[in-house]
Image 1: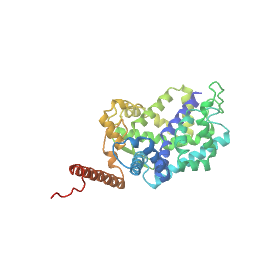
Image 2: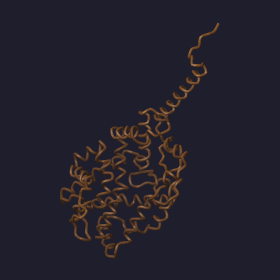
Image 3: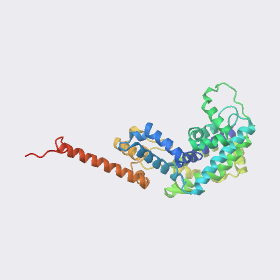
Length: 353
């Protein structure tokens, strides 16, 4: 059904690009969760590749500071109000999903097999919300059916490709349990996409949407918006009418959104500094100078961005002080080694008569 396919695609985009913000907030805002991932980063991932010689505990602090700045502050979560709202959205989403599985008996969001909506939710629900200590506890206690759904999604490869795809919704309609998510798209996600595009068009580096302030602009989200409108235009006339009817009924300003197609088309090409390809693709590491790769690794900058000290400057004062102390210690050690070598291997040479 074209209408169900488009709605599933719209909800997937919302889950993957907007609901994901809360996943990173829970991961890096709470001490237990941040410490857990920081240790993993230092032991197994990018931190151990840094050319800056720092001890493990300091590398953990640097990782936390960098991730918090990049994925929490730059997402607009800067005060108690925005933090409370982010937590509210997560709990509300769990409530809606729990109600969907309990009241419909569906194994997935539309029937007996996963849809794009399922996979969009799964990205953050499994790898973040269901595994990080704080949100996982909330999920297990308040939405056990969602926790069970995460396991089903993880095991979805066991589903036979030739089995019947049972859909518990009439053609041209959607499950009634999807409506709360569509309301969230209308109140949160569509305004977010529009404000992001308008800010890029003005030449601004950030924008405000709802209770989130100073959100870093992202041309990629303009590309997402453009793609949504293109999918809508590809629908047959009766499908467009039905989609418009459903979205208008839940309070989505869909007509206003599709009128900005030219704006999304224009701003989606405003790719960031140092990026020379259009969304959704980024330059490969092979096209980046090796010197830039070293600097980016040291400062925690994605390889497709221009090397900058901005990341280091944004670190907290305590981390900066510890880094300076570490480098001072290294400099002192080098001086001692030079002195020892000049003394020809004798730290305290005896006086000769």
